[in-house]
Length: 269
Image (cartoon, rainbow, N blue to C red; front, top):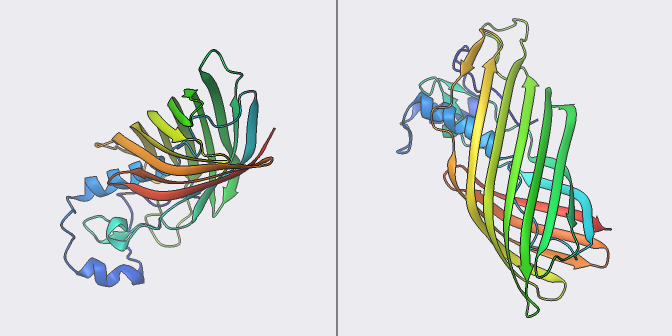
C-alpha cells in the first residue's frame, strides 16, 4: 500500500517523467546513495506515526470515540526517488492516504487529571500488490481547567510491516520475489489546547524515534538505515464535537521528512 522499491541491488530504470531531472545536476541537499536510502526508510515509518488528532482531553471523561483516520501520504519528488547514483527511480507514490480505524477513551476524572488511551489498527489487507499491517496505541494524561485551557502529556507507538515485491527483480521478466519492510516509531508529546465550546484548537510538540528493517528477497540482503530518525515531531489541529459526531484535523510534521495533513471522523459513545 505505501512502501515500494527501496533496493540498492536492482537493474537501473528511470521513470520517463523523471528522466530530465536525472540527467540534470543533483540538488544541493543531495549527499549520497546511503542518505537517499535512509530517507526512504525513515519516510515510510514516519508516514504511519500515530499523531494526536485530538485535543489534550480527547473526549468527555467516561466517554470515547470510534471512527476512521485518514493520513495523507505526500508524493515524493523525482529527486527524492532517485537512487543508485541517481540512475534509478523508486516507485514510491502508489497510495495517497493511509486509512486507519481508531478508537479513543477518556477515563473518569481522577482528581484534576483525565487519563485516556487509544488504539488504531490496519488489518493485513493486500492493496496495490502489498500486504500491510499497522498497529498503533497511545496513553495520556491531561488537566483541563474550567476557564478553557487544557494541558497534557502523551505517549504513542506504531508498529508496521509490509510484505510485497518491494525491490524489483534483477532481470526484466524474472519471477517476483517477496521482500519485507518493517518500521516502528514511538514518542512523547506535550500538548496544549483551549476548549471553546464545541471546538478545541490544540498544539503538540515532542520527540519521535523511528526504527526500520528492510530485507531484499532477491539476494537476501538487509538494507541498513545508518541515520534513523530521532527528533522533533509536532502538530497543530482542531477537534470538534457536534452532538455524537467527533471530528478532527491537523497539520503534522517531522521536519526534513514529513509535512502532511491528517483527518479523523468518529462517533462518540
